[in-house]
Image (cartoon, rainbow, N blue to C red; front, side, top):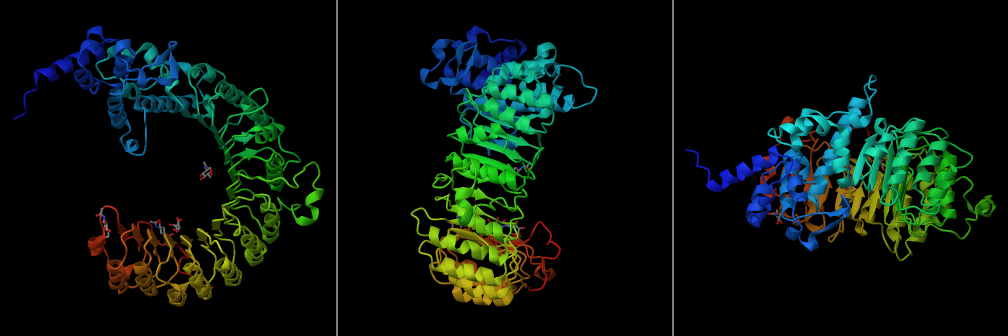
Length: 604
Ligand SMILES: *[C@@H]1O[C@H](CO)[C@@H](O)[C@H](O)[C@H]1NC(C)=O
Ligand SMILES: *[C@@H]1O[C@H](CO)[C@@H](O)[C@H](O)[C@H]1NC(C)=O
Ligand SMILES: *[C@@H]1O[C@H](CO)[C@@H](O)[C@H](O)[C@H]1NC(C)=O
Ligand SMILES: *[C@@H]1O[C@H](CO)[C@@H](O)[C@H](O)[C@H]1NC(C)=O
C-alpha cells in the first residue's frame, strides 16, 4: 500500500504549483522557516527557482554569500547558498552524465550557462537552413527546450517572448562565462543579444566570411575585459581577418588579457607568408599574460613557424606552452644555427630567450635531420624547457644524434629537461641505443620517454634494460618490435626498487616472455600504477605466471591491460583475476578493440 502523503508535502506541492503557475512568488513564501523554504526550492523547476531566488527579500540574504560577477538590474545577484543543492538537482535532471565531471561551485551559474549554450546550438541549427531569413533573436526554441526550464503547469511560458532566443540570451546571458558559437550566429546582432555576458572563454567554429569576422570582432571587443581564452576551429582566415581579430583583443592597442589562444584545423590564406599579419605580431608581442599559444593542423609552412618563433623571441615572451603541431614546417629554423645566428635581419635575437617556455610541441611537421640540428640551436634560447614532443617527424637516427648534445647540456640545469616524445620518428636500433647510452649516464635522468612505433627490434633491449634502472617514471615502448628475445634481455636489466610508474609494452609480440617480465618487474616496482601489455601474442599458459606476478605486486598497481592476446580461443574472462581486482584496481583481459592490421609484422 502506498504511504499517505503528509500534510506538509501536500502544502509544499500546492505552493510549488502556485509559484509555477504565476510568473512571480507570493511574498508570504519568504516568511517560511528556512528548512521549509529549502524543501520548496528543491521541488521547483529552474525558471520558478530563479524567480524564488531573485525575489528574495534583502533581510534573508547573507552578506557573505554575495556573488560579485553578475550585476542584474543594477543590483548584485543574490545567492542563497542553500539553493545551490536545488540547482544541482535541476542540473542533474537535465545533464545527469555531466554532473560528476563538473566541479561547480555555483550550480545556478552552471545551469543557465549550459542552458544558454543549448539554446544557441538549437538556434544555429535552425539558422543554417538556407531559407532562413529572420533575425536570430526571433528564433523560437522547441517545446523540449522550454520543458526543461518550466514545468507543464506554466501555460504562459509556452508562447510569446519565452519562446524566443532573445529572451534566453537577455535573461540568462549574465550567467554565461564560457560559450561556443557556430559562425552562423556571428552576425552583428549577436553582440546585442549577448550584451549581458561577461565571457571568459569563447570557442568559434566555421568562421569563413568577412561579416562573420566583424560579428566576432564586435563580440570580442565587448568581452575584452573578461576574456582569457579564445579558440578558433575549422575557420578560414585571411591576413586581414587575423589582424581584425587580434586588434579586437587589444586594449588601446597596448596590451591584452588573453591567456590561451588557439587556432585549430583552419585554413590561412597565406600559409607561408613573407611576414606575419601585423595584428598577430602585436598580439604575441604585447600579451604579457599569454600562457599558451596553439596553431595546430593549419597547414602552415616554414615561414609561418619561423616568424612566430622569432616574434616570440624578439619580444622575450612569457609564454609557457607553444604548440605548432600537425603543420608542414620543415626548414622553419633553417637559418637558426650558430653560423648565421647574428645575421638574421630585423631580429635582435642574440642574447634573447623564452625564459618561461616549458612545453614545445612540434609533432607531425615533416621535420628531418637538419631540422633536428637547427632545433638544437633554437633550444639554446629556451633555457627552461621541460617537455619536447617531436613525434611523427622522420628525423631518423642522424636527427636524434644531432640532438644528443642538447640532452647532455640540459641535464646540468637546476630544472632539468624531463619529458621527451620520439614516437614514430623513423629511428632504428643504432640511433636509439646511442641515445639511451647517453641518457643513462646523465646526472638528472628523464621523467618520461616515448620511443613507440619506431622499428627498433630486439637488439635495443640491452640498452633499454640499463636505462630502465635509472629513475625513468613513464616509458612507452609500444610497437618497437622487442619480441621474445628482447624481453629476455630486458628482464636482465630489471632491478629491485625501480621508479617506473607507467609502462606501455603493448604490440611487441613478446609472447610468454611478457609474463616472465612482469613476474620480475611487479614485486620490486612499488610506484607502478599502470602496465599496458596488450597485443603481445601471449599464450594461455602466461596467465598462471601473471597470477603469481600479481600476488607479489605492490598495492599501487591500478591497471594491467592484457587485452588483444587471443588466449588461444579460450575466452579468458575477468573473473579469472577477480581476486586481484577491486574498486581501485582493474585488470583487462578482453580488448574491446580488435587487433589492428599489420600489428604482428615480422621483426625488422
Ligand atoms: C585542436 O588541437 C588539439 C591539440 O592542441 C587537438 O587535441 C584537438 O583534437 C584539435 N581539435 C580539432 C577540432 O582539430
Ligand atoms: C602507452 O603508454 C604510455 C605511457 O604509459 C601512455 O601515455 C600511452 O597513452 C599508452 N598508449 C596507449 C595507446 O595506451
Ligand atoms: C593499451 O594499448 C592498446 C594498444 O595500443 C590500446 O588499444 C589500449 O587502449 C591501451 N590500454 C589502455 C588502458 O590505455
Ligand atoms: C585493492 O587491492 C589492493 C591490492 O590487493 C590493495 O592494496 C588495495 O588497498 C585495495 N583497495 C581497496 C579499495 O580495497
